Picture 1 (cartoon, rainbow, N blue to C red):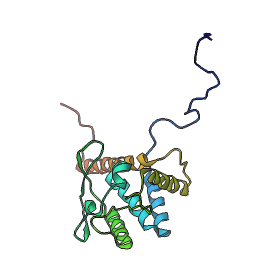
Picture 2 (picture 1 turned 60 degrees about the vertical axis):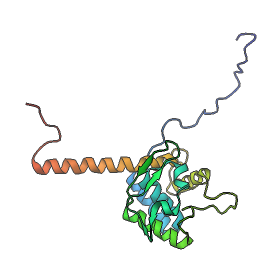
Picture 3 (picture 1 turned 120 degrees about the vertical axis):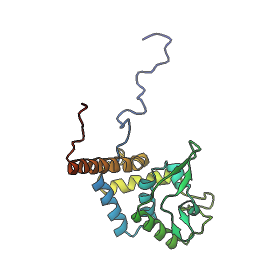
Picture 4 (picture 1 turned 60 degrees about the horizontal axis):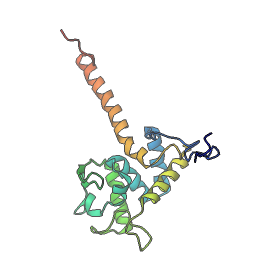
Length: 190
């Protein structure tokens, strides 16, 4: 060691022993297990938040800041809402499944929310909606409920989930269509 070095060999790095890199998306069976558990527990808000997170692929900060008017047109939950992202300042349109629309509609009715309110309001008076940290805690508890490691999954796992499940099913559907026509997925160039 150098006599004037500030490096202390006894200092442990902050990320030693922690999982680094991207957190994996949830698998279809894990999505199904979580959805069923939330339904059986009658956790309407959590079910709406979970389904909306997967369908919208929004960042946590944008998801918790959604207003009722962002997803609802009149008395119906919109098929394809458009939301302005806070990070990129660009509008993003996403499609909601029937299951998500029903869950969000049930949550709006149960919580008696009006169009000008946040979709997931906070119980604290100083905060208008749940925080991203509270959302992260919810995701952590959901993941733990189905026996997965909470450290391995996070809010970004939900954001990445729909893309992996839909691309797999689209690939499978494309393969089936090509087989029906008698073509293979890879065509030779002649």
